[in-house]
Amino acid sequence: MHNLSPELNIALKAARAGAEIIRDRYGKIPETRLKAGSETLVTDTDIAAEKVILKVLRENSDYGIISEESGQTGIADGPQWVVDPLDGTSNFARALPLFAVSVGLIHGSQSLAGVIIDPVLQNEYYAEKEQGAYCNGERLKMPRFRKDYGINLFLNHGSCDKDKLKYAAVNERLACDYRLRKLGTTALELCYVANGSFDGFICSGDELWDFAAGIVIATEAGCMFTDWQGNLWERGENHLLFARPEIHEELIAKLKG
Image (cartoon, rainbow, N blue to C red; front, side, top):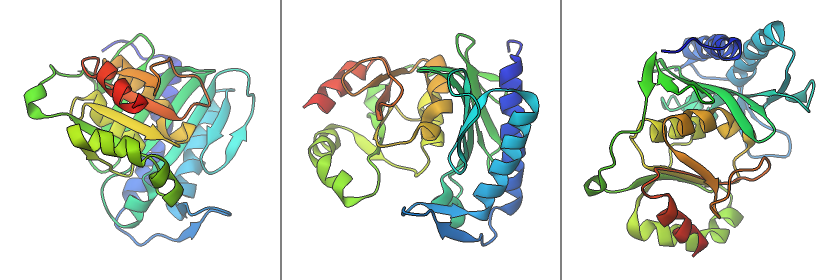
């Protein structure tokens, strides 16, 4: 394994602190509420995990921060930490072991470093640009493509009715040829694409903190990442496609209709 940069070490330290909070509270009934003006669930564990993560980041760097629960703070025109303290809150609240801590570092539209930790299985996925991706210290690369296994994709269009109606045609085209799944945690879904358990991830409407850390992990493992038109991702775009190189063009054609 290569020597980790100071930034990646900071991200690992912060994510581990958050994961410890979550692991200690998993399986206990959390205090919950809906975010103001939203149907999004938040728990006391989201808040507690975010608090320790942000403390580590602020003590060890001067970069700006974008976090799901606290919004944006600090300098916005340089590198920024992007934090989802508990991706998969609904799963966590129901004691379903599919959730993660996500800490990424981006500059503009470039994902520089990322850490995603599964607190239950204690898997640590991390990567930095041009330095490879790793899981628990082992190099992470997508295995050889086996089309005879079928093509398995994660598909996430959000949960509201207008999204389901808007993308019904896309869903139908994809469902005819691929096995579609959704875990309720974008961060872990991207890790499962990176390790080859799944072949691609398609979404619309995800927020930056959902996928910022996953960009560099997936791409450094060998995944292609574009918008639905096949263009390089630009910050602000949330129609996203992560896919094995062997099926990327095929999926673009399906998304274009």
